[in-house]
Amino acid sequence: MSLLDNSTPTTQRSVFFAAVVAGVAVLLYLFAVQPCQDSIARAKQERTALEDQKRVMERDIKDSPRVKSMLAEIEKARTPYMEALLTPLLESWAMRAKSLLDPLAADVGLKGLDYVELPPRALPLPKPTPIQLYARRPIRVSCRGSYAEIVSFILRVEKVLPYVAMQSFTIKAQQDPEAQSATIVFEWPAKGALSRTVPQAKGGPR
Image (cartoon, rainbow, N blue to C red; front, side):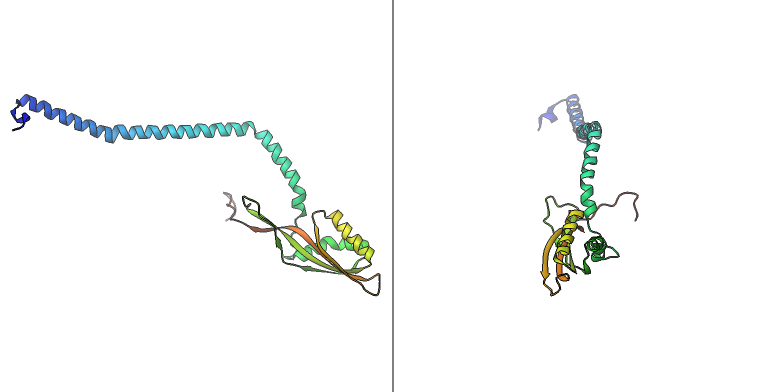
């Protein structure tokens, strides 16, 4: 027989109530106290994160004039590069090059100009890879004129369009010294493909 069987009814009731109270205490801890403690811990973590975010925002607000000034300087510095990019005219890169080079050729007296678009040349990718990629867009220009006129044309292109590079230059001698045949390949900076999808701004066109 167990000790509980030999004890008095009063002792048995005390032991029973003690067991019940202990069980209730365990249940309260598991289903009330512990969840509250977990909630408090999560709330502290969220508060810490919000405080960190607040400090970052306050710092950004404090530095806003300086950041705006830096962005304005960067925008000013990149403007010549963006304006130098070749863009297609009537869906033709050669037509755009023609519109830019014909006036320079006419100034020096070149004749018989012909423009041919060549395959683009990809540029080395920096790391991290930017969203917008760029390339070199070659345009082959054939023309006729004197050697002095051809050289003068190249020098004018270098002066007026400093971001255009001459990839190659060949000249074929003709009997008429005033009608030499030249082939020049100029390379323009141009936008290439996107390396990844650009997120669409909220409220933009769908």
